[in-house]
Structures are given as structure tokens and as C-alpha cells.
Image 1 (cartoon, rainbow, N blue to C red):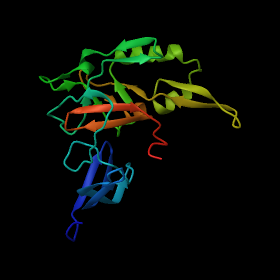
Image 2: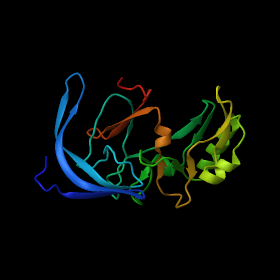
Image 3: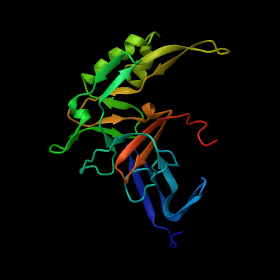
Length: 226
């Protein structure tokens, strides 16, 4: 643990903030070999605004908890202006294994000259942000395969275009609104896109910092580790 008194910390993420005292301790990961990880930083949160009290740090900073494993792998892209973010290349999106929308060059490659482009993979941002006309093409492709009616009230309330009214299974018969969390980027079309956490649900994501790559594996996250 830290020498008393423990140092104070505050951490801003998006429009939220957490603050409290900082400490170090040993983190024990239960596995076949029960790894002990000494000198892991822990924040004892005393104040939280628009952020959950408990956050596990997987950033690139020296306070992060990192891991690596087998996966389907894609290389990380590096942005010297934002070295703590994880960047990947987005080649295309396939809808229902029938329609493939090819990503623009700005999302395929990070431009090392202008320091723009690429996709930020971010578990702290709920929705995925894409530029036009790529976003509009994706929206049309999804609309063509979703057979449920649009939900204009949910669209007006949430700001998401792809909102539908879907049936609810018994015993609660009826319908409910569901929105697919994709957003059009309104800023510079050369800016980086964002791969949000909604599209990462049901996917185990592994950050291999040593080899500068990110792995993806579709899994049942609810029962994972049981």
C-alpha cells in the first residue's frame, strides 16, 4: 500500500470524472498458475460524476492492467498525438453475410502525415461513429434486412437513426423500441472513426501490447469464467 497519506487523483473520461486517493497493491488473477501482479495502482473513488465508480484500466498508460491471448488478430495503428488510444484499421462491414460496405481509405489507414484517420476502439464510448457516405450506405444495408417497423419516437429521443419496434416474447406480449447504436460523424470527414462498446458486446477483446495487436473472439461474456 502507499505511504500515508495516500496521494490524491482525478481522472476525466468523456464528460465524466472520478476522484479520490491512489494506492498500490498486489493483484491476484485466479487461473491455473494463480499469477500475482505486484504494484498495481488502485484508485479509491470518493467522488464520481457521470462515470461508474468501478473502472478497470486497459489503456496504454503505465497505470493500466494489460493482457494478451489467442484471438483473431488485427495490428494496432499508432497515433503519436494520442498515444494512449488504441487505433485499428477498418476494411469493411458485412450485413447478413450478403452486403459488404467497404470502408473509406480514411478508416482503413491512419495517415501518419496529417495524423488523422483510422478507427479508435473504445470501450468507454457506447456508440460507433462513422463518416458519410459510409454511414449512410451501412444504414441502408441494415434497413434492407430488418423487417420490423421504424420507431420515430425513439429516434427523436435518442438521436439514433436505426430505431425499430420489435416484439416482446410472452408473458409480456407487445413491442418495445430497440436502437442500433451507430452515429454519423458530423465533424471533419478525415477524422478518426470510433468502434464503440455496443458493437463489442458478446466479444472478448484482448490487447496484446507486446506485439502491438488486438484480438477478437465471439464468446458468451455473461457466463465467461463460470
